[in-house]
Image (cartoon, rainbow, N blue to C red; front, side):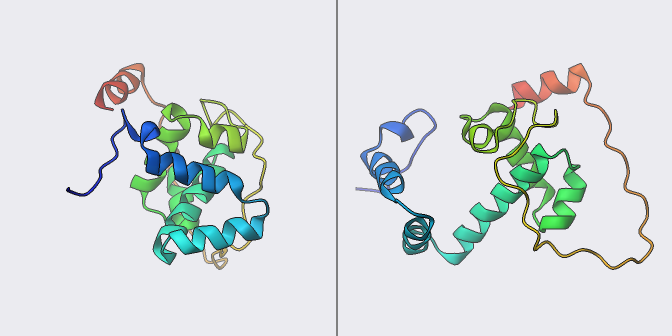
Length: 146
């Protein structure tokens, strides 16, 4: 039998995925969860998940994609992907962060961004370019692209 592959249509019905969800829910404390996550994930996976959550927090706070990429070290592709999941995903980010589907509308996250993000030195930086508003045509094209 080949490697098991999850698909968007079937992953929730997969017994392995259901077992993972049950295991996550069974963790009673943050320490239990940290131990479990470390046992099942590599450090790279844990870093990627943590980075995505930080990106989501900053998106909900209304920071620009470029600023988020600079502050977190995440690629703009990752920032865009997280934004798409906030907008059109299953609602996990929105529920955890108490965000609206249109995440730039001033939602109040449950957790604040970490303070451990390095702050650049006070060297004169060029003013970041303002993000251009998305046109209705761009929205329609994005919707049909996914």
